[in-house]
Amino acid sequence: MSDFFDLPDDSFVKKNTSDRKTDSNIYNPDPNAFNGSYKSVFRFVPYIHDKTMSKFTKYSAKFWNPLTKEALYVDCPSNVGKPSILWDIERVIKGLEKEEPELHKKLKDSFSRWHSNWSPVYIKKDPQRPELEGQIKFFKFSSQINTIIDGQINPEENELVAPKPSINPYHLLKGKDFLCVVGKKTKVFRDWSKCEFMDDVTPLVFKVGDKQVAVENSENSIKLVQEFLTKNTPKLDEYFHRAWTPEQFDKVAEAIVSTITPRPVLNMVLDRTKDSDMKAAILAKLDGGSAPNVPAANLIDESVEFKSEPVAPAPTVKTHVNNEDPLEPVSASGQATEEKDEYDALFDDM
Image 1 (cartoon, helix red, strand yellow):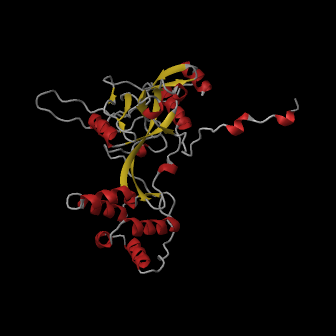
Image 2: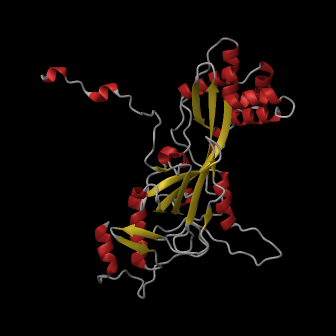
Image 3: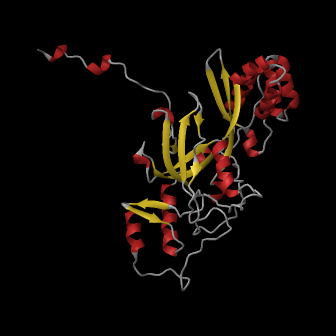
């Protein structure tokens, strides 16, 4: 039979495609993709490019237009200490919960503001996706995980039991591995209640080639882990707060006018807000005019500091997050030795 009659089968079979974008730099232990449960072990590590950003928090917001089925996502100006009408909207909506429950629900369906925490993690064991083991990704987590971290750094005092020592899980010599057990709470929300830190305080153990290397308090070990983290930790720049462009500013004003209704509720927001530029833009739209021009800001503004405990600037050779127990190179002469040792082969593998 002539090839003229052949038809490509793939053209008639519906393919399962998704418009959802995935970020290869983000570690996402998603139970929905693995029968409702996800288990792994990883280690929170310092952000080698700027240790004060080893854990940072960012507020974001979403407007949802039920008529056009369009969503608008923006970062909240409160991230950089500026007046935020998004924060004002959140407070006004919350104040309606008891007296106007139906209106409260309607507005919550149209607007939400939340915060997320970010940290780099070294993935030690992941049976679901073993190809990720030995890599450093960014872990985006909620307040539930943040509370677990803070419980290690600032343990609760109890008169009935001996006080627990303060442990910074990010410490490369005296930190802890994290057992991540994620389940499904609902179709959208995840259950993080079974996550916990391991009991043992251990150094970071990372993979170089086919070898597992534990961090030590020695000059060569510090040099090796510093080089490993520098080469393998992605940059956080694109995840920091992004200031609104003039176009985004105008879209936010339009979204507020269309979703924060009825007018008395919007008036409450306008009376409350200290964001004079946004207030003027909204009033102009309500009067049928155009929003005033707003100068463009820097793409990335100063981000939120890791506030779980004070972090002092440290020399680049150190491998700790806090400065309670500095990790200094051990050398009898104070100088790096030129003799060959087991670390030379490890550097070659990197």
